[in-house]
Image (cartoon, rainbow, N blue to C red; front, side, top):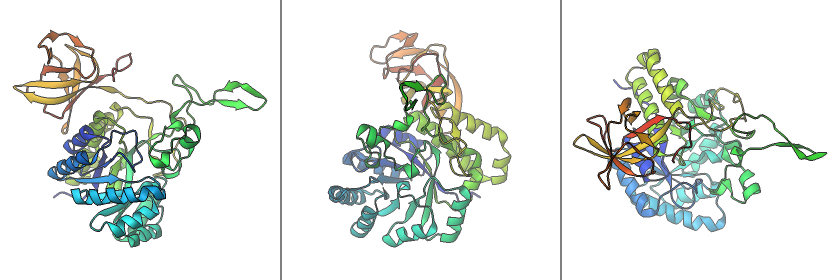
Length: 415
């Protein structure tokens, strides 16, 4: 008998990552429209695309949440309310909101639309959660600065009065709950209004006052110096405790991420959560599965992993210099017919290359036996043009929506 477990919530910056999240097992997906969200550089959805996204999510038995989580100014509120009405009418399951006034007005003026309080609101105690419940919210996305013990205590205090959600994987912000002013100061682009330029990821040097022309490195490796850059959160090793913590939803960060990231991370957490739900003891004893899933998470582009604030102060608050990955994105499977896959190429690969399939059931070895340019029918040994469509034999090892990855070569990726 399957144990009851929290929802797995995945990000989607555009339509293909959304489809990928649903295919790889997300229970819910969160996305944004062109305005009012905190990821203005993501592809985002127009209203017609959002309506299509809702239909796709619901057809897959999943929910769709819309981010309206900027800190609003007076001029923003009418548009946010109009968007909330439109979202409700097209079947969006909830909106994620951070601004106190926007939370109150949407809950009051758009009946039938659930309101989730964004992590930007910095909720760190049960009394604040009750205040949001009184305003009409049904869920609170907790501040990332809480420990797991504090989350468990909050859940016990609230007795299900309001749902609790927490980020369990992905990038973390160097500022409290993501409320950062660096981007505004340095570039004029407000992180709190969706236009963060991520200056915490930039390279910095130190200057002594009497020697202003002499730059002093702070902590440098071959990538440079980034004293403000936080590590990525990864709670895979602590999943059983998360699943028993009282959280209603486990959230993956990444609306700026590609479909290979979504497929790999969502797929790994889905497999782990399902295995625990089937048999918690067997899951905790299955070290081979744990190693496989940890290796999966290492294959995507990421900064050094740690557990954020879940077990107290992060091991390193800064110095997560650069990114690392064990594999790179080779292709997206558009269609399969007669044992031949139509693949949109992402990075160069050759006939004879040993790649891996990325499927909802895990990854498997895959050898490229032939490459045919789809638009010309020409058989080639290699294709170096990004987004070229090629046909490759695959037998029954691939299906539409699967992906291919391969080893990182000593060169700059095509994409």
